Amino acid sequence: MNCPELKAAAEEFSYLHFTDVCRLDEFLHLDIAQLTHLLHQDKLTVYCETQVYDAAVHWLKYNISSRQQHIVDVLRCVRLPLVPKTFLSETVKIEPLFQDNPHCFQMITCAMWDLGEVSQPRRKKYDNCIGLFDGNHCYYFDPKDYSWMSINLKLSKRQNTTAVLWNRVGCILGGSHSFHIKHTDFYNILRNRCSRPGPSTPRENMSACAFEGKIFTSGGSEAGGSAVDLFESYDTMTESWQVNTSMLVSRSSHASVEANGLIYVCGGMTGNGVSGRVLRNCEVYDPSTQQWRKLHEMRVARKNHGLVVVDNKIYAVGGEGSTGGLDSVEYYDITINKWHAASRMPWRSLTVKCVAVGDIIFVLAGKGLGAQCLRNVLEYHTKTNRWVTSNAQAFSSTSCIICTVGP
Image 1 (cartoon, rainbow, N blue to C red):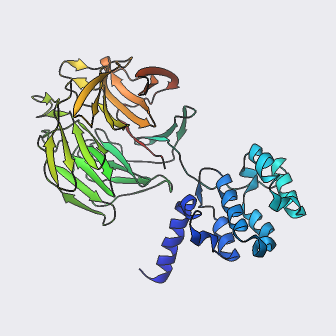
Image 2: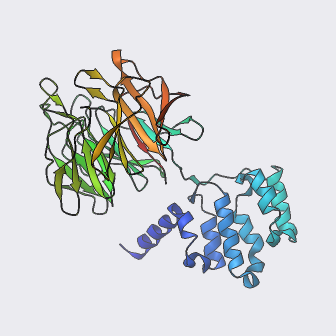
Image 3: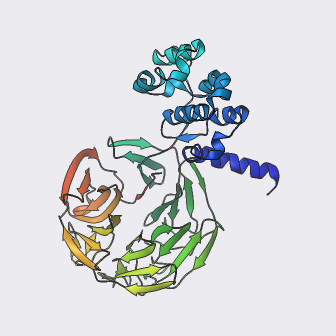
C-alpha cells in the first residue's frame, strides 16, 4: 500500500469511527485545518449532529486560550439545522463560549428558527436496528418506534439462506434459487454497498455466526439434499475461507450463536427432506482448541427455529418439530448446562425469524400452519417471561434473512 492509499484508508477509518476517534488524545491535538477538514465531512458516521457539536466544543475547551480565535470557524463545521431544537435552546444557546460572539449567536438563532440553508445529513449510524433482506425487498426495522424503512439494495433472489453481522457488515451466505448459489454477498451497512468475496462451499439451510473477525458457517445441505457436518470459517482480515473440524452431527435447518467465545449449534435436521429426522441434539465448538463437545439436548426437537443469546442464556424459539409446528420456547443456561421451558409463543410456527435487542426478543417474520405468514411482530420480554403482540405488521416474506445492525 502506497502513501496516498494509506492516508485514504486512515481518513475513511476516522469517518466511520468518528465517535470513538473524537475521544482520543490525538483528536485534541489536531490543528485547526485538520479539525475543520474532519468536521466538514459528509461521511462522518454519527447517530446525531449533537455528537459533532460535542466533539467541536471538546476540542475548543482543551486549550481555550489559544483556540478562542477559531470559535466561529469551528462552529461553522457543525450543521446546526440538524441539531434538535431542544438541544439548541438548552445547551448550545447557553454555552459560554458562544454567548458573547455575535457571529455564533446569529448561526444559532438561524438554526433555531430554520432561517438558514438546508444542511446535508451526515452518514447515519444505526443503533439497534434490525435488517431484513429478501432479494429486492430489504428493510430496516427500528424497535424503538416499530417503524419499517426501505433499503435501496438489490440482492440475488434466494431462499434457505442465512445472515450474520460483523463489524457493521452484513454477510448473506448460501441458499438456492433454482440452483445452489455459489457466492456470498457482503452488505456494508454504513456504505449501503455490496461486495462478493470468494465463495465458500455452496449449500443451503446452513447457519452462521461471527466471533473475533471470523464468520463461522455450519452444516446445511449440498446438491443431493442430505445434511452435512461441514464447518468452515471466513477470516475477514485475510478474506479467505478455511475448513475447520467437522461437527459431531450432520445437520441442516439448524441454528447457531456465539456466546462467551464459543460457537453453539442447536437442533436442525439430519438426513434429507424425505427420510430426515428432527434433532434435539446440541454441540459447542471452542475456536481456541478447534474441538467440539456434546451438550445437554433440548427439551423439544426443532428445526427452522430462532436462536438468540440474552444474559448468558440461549433461547430456542418456535420452529418445526417432529409432528408439526411449535409454539414452545426454551432456554439453555450456559452456567449449568441445562435447558428450561419458557412461556409459549401466542402463535404456532413452522419457521421463525427473530433477533434479540437488549433483553427483548423480536419475532419479525415467520411461517405458521397452513403456510400462513406471521401477521404482527411478537416480543418476548425475557425479564418477565411474557409475550406481547405488537401493532406493528410483521415482514411478509418467510424466505427473508435477518440480523441486527446495531453499533
